[in-house]
Amino acid sequence: MKVSCPHMGHLHYMLEDLFERLGVEYVKPPVSTTKTLTIGAKHSPEFACLPLKINVGNFIEALDMGADTLIMAGGHGPCRFGYYGIVEERILRDLGYEFDFMMLEPFNDGKRDFYNTFKQLSPGLTIRKLYRILRTSFAKGRAFDYVHKRSLQVRAYEVNRGDTTRALRQAEELLSLAYTPEEIEEAGREALALIDAVEQDPDRDVIKVAIVGEFFLLLEPFSNFGLEEILGHMGVYLERSVWVTDWIAPNRDNKVYGFPKKLVEEKAAPYLNHNVGGEGRETIGSIVLMAERGFDGILQLLPFGCMPENIATSIIPKVQRDHDIPVLTLAFDEQTGRAGLVTRVEAFLDLLAARRGSRLALAGAAAATEKVTAGQV
Image (cartoon, rainbow, N blue to C red; front, side, top):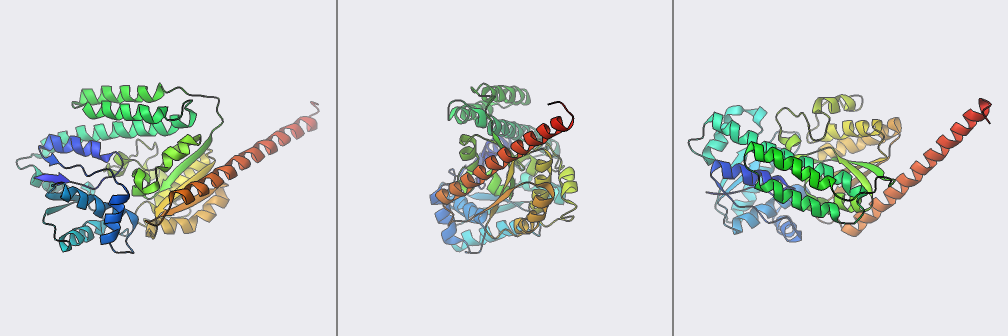
């Protein structure tokens, strides 16, 4: 059995570890490229969103590399994501590919079905052994998340352009070699130390921006033209609302993000108090959270036609007014160009910088007025 899954950010490190422990050969699809998207878009419905088209391209590239079993995460409405696997399987079979297909449904949707999916991959697997394997691979995935999160913050202060990215590659290599729980824990500490060792300018005045939106657009750099690295090189301090292990953790404690899903939903409640699928509600809650934390602005990323994020987009103007925070919405599809994206982001950052300057000037004027009123000058 040669298993493959769609490519998404650094998820493949955790999958490599997981399938090795299960004794299953893993065919890692190539990193997503324009070729991947071209293949996927050619064979996908035009109205399908960008992540599905990239997934189809990933699967075709994996099948061409010899994969014979494809695994896709499942889900439930109202987002179309729950149908991705069904649509993707039909597209691939219509193209003449022969393969086994498995849908891995969320743990909370049925523990027995979740276990049985893994048992098909690894006959004889006990629940206890699966638990140990998942716990260890998850810990490794979480270590990758923490390292990537730290890199988003350090890159804004790096003295030599590219040092953070080079340190991140070293950290990934270090983590990928760790196997036992103890080795993973130690490698996680060393990987974070590598990022922190990047020469930084702590006095640099950086713009603080949060990235929120649909999970795939946030987690897969190819889908957003490597926006995080672009912003980091512009001296922007970044935080992101979605991380791989937060997204798959059954309890949604969001340890990497730092704010549990329950709190995010409470923040969204005055504007959106029910689930609309995907990350729609979390997008609203995260904007409120980041505004309260003093961020300068928000970038919302979504695939063109994404229903949950479009609902959030329709609500954002009121959130902006109530919390006095600018939000730039960026929709992506296969027609989106990098140059146009960068131009829009640069203009947004200019706005944030000017806005911060005006606010500081107003604050200074107010302080001077208070001194005059108090007779101190």
